[in-house]
Image 1 (tube, rainbow, N blue to C red):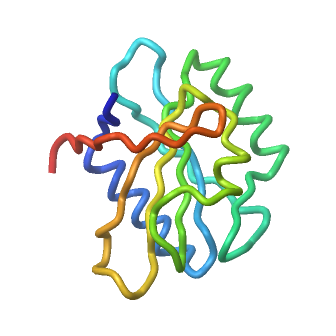
Image 2: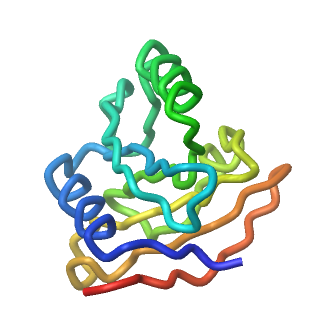
Length: 139
């Protein structure tokens, strides 16, 4: 299964990742359960404030889930940046992946690669990582 995502959302994720660098940026993209494309970008605070680890602040996460219920939305994408490594889930990322229906998007902001060249999506289910194609809609 591929991640289908609008170009403006991809740009918003890159802007967030670059703004937060060298700290890992993190957040989600949500959308109505009835829609095929995620629509709403929600940047979250990395409460770990770390260049090698991200963690959603617990109260903000609880508020997010309540809002999803109220708006009849689903959590389509969970994203974060890697600031010095490739855009591939770390052992910690895999251990904390608890949303089997979500696309896990990683962006790498490490300096030795071309800007905005690593944007990858994965499914992480029961510790198994599967990379999936990304289809960017629009320009």
